[in-house]
Length: 182
Image 1 (tube, rainbow, N blue to C red):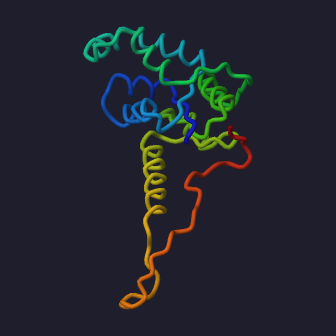
Image 2 (image 1 turned 90 degrees about the vertical axis):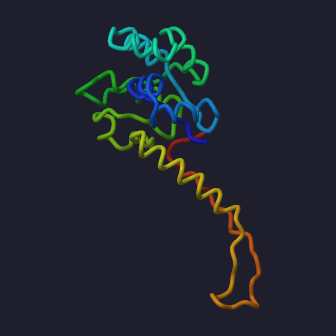
Image 3 (image 1 turned 30 degrees about the vertical axis):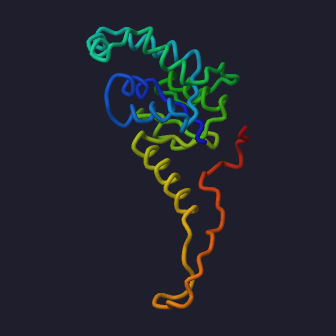
């Protein structure tokens, strides 16, 4: 199962708009992915949701700031990062996302932030756009389904040799060897 950290903008988009970001949050609600969040990122989310420009959107979704935060807190595992990172100089707040991901032993950070996306990978953690992440997990699901389907041996047109064999087992999840997973 993917261990995922979402940046604040991805969380806000997923909470307040229908689209790919909300699909990612639904996957966390349905336990298809494991979502991690630090107290710092939760506090940042609260501050952003309190901005006037989001009040109408919250109201349309029948959310208060407290309800939106509670929803995320219920589906995410809250952690306290055990590391300080100073990699993103242009926007130091982005380092909080990296700290959360490293401390959570995440496999993926999902972000729309160019500073993070430009890194592509940090400490063995893939940094993907929402679209790329959805494509990745859809591909993994497809690979798993293909492994469960029997396939035929023999050459095309060989009607007498239609033995059904089990496909060999393969690990459809790409895990980084250099980052331990629990």
